[in-house]
Length: 58
Image 1 (cartoon, rainbow, N blue to C red):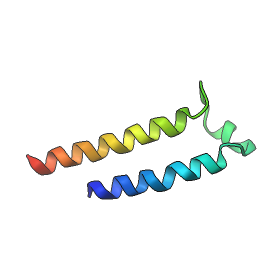
Image 2 (image 1 turned 90 degrees about the horizontal axis):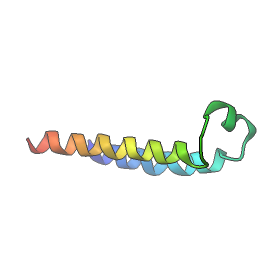
Image 3 (image 1 turned 135 degrees about the vertical axis):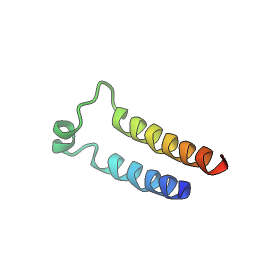
Image 4 (image 1 turned 135 degrees about the horizontal axis):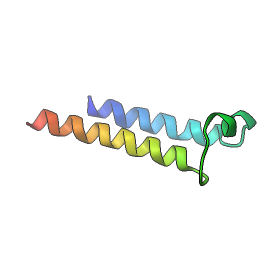
């Protein structure tokens, strides 16, 4: 299950990078600094994977 989160993160990050220069991206995601959305999503994916890994161990 945790592998699924890593795969999703690997797929989502390049997609966000591709669409970052499209005009509707700035309207959809409000960012304080460039790349903030990508960093936040990666943190969320890795936290989900860590929680799942800990839950499987316990």
